[in-house]
Image 1: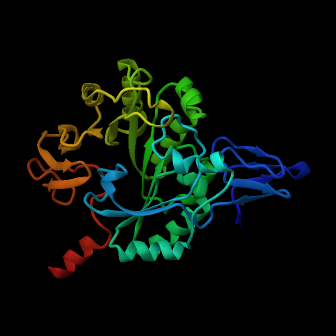
Image 2 (image 1 turned 180 degrees about the vertical axis):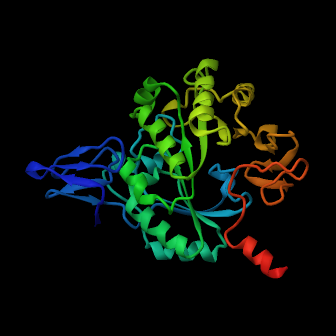
Length: 349
């Protein structure tokens, strides 16, 4: 247990959490919506500091981040809990664990141990993922700061519901984020996720403002967020408010958790969404969860030539030269170089 940051003490030992956009008012002895921040005697405590429920080595493409150190490894960590209650969560067994069991599980560890394990595994970044990283922000922040001092980069896979205060805390330490834009309808967020749309849009714009490399993912669920109108709304928001260089991942839903009765997303729907995104002006639109589809690949937005060929989470071919198209010379947006690699190459020359 560790006293939390991001909260305000109120009268009668109440506290107001300021970590995520729910801004929970928490009474003594109670927890916030995430289930992992508890008011004890008028002080707010994080119950998951240093309690990791998952530690794995993943290809960065699994996040998915396609324009952030492609082909590299990410040391991926998570704590139990989430500030959303998505009915289609693929990791519900760990994200909803505190709510189901009223307890916290995880392996005790420290930021230094995480950074050392990442280095030993030859990972180029640390990914805060699987559950919502906002709910273990204190641990994530300390780890990210230490990782930076060792030349590692940091990325979030997030629902985008953190407060501006929390994002300021990570400013300068968080290099990239893949943000789920689950729908462009507030009703979807309220009914399916237990949240609201507008705070996610505001977080995306704030991340862009403070120079975090952004990629956006929309899991397309048949009958819920797959209309042509809604897909156009999402694509236009990304293009106009974030920039045409921000990659959009349109991903296939598969039946799980409380939506096991729904069908998989037809591949044709994903391809239609990709076409909508490209017609809106987005430079990069990717189809997810369909290994071997052309939509996994990166093409030069200027000349249309193939730059990176993927098969699921693996890089089969990378034709780019330091982030440039070898055919027309156009710079491709992203973070392509592993820290120190350019310097090492110059020293060899």
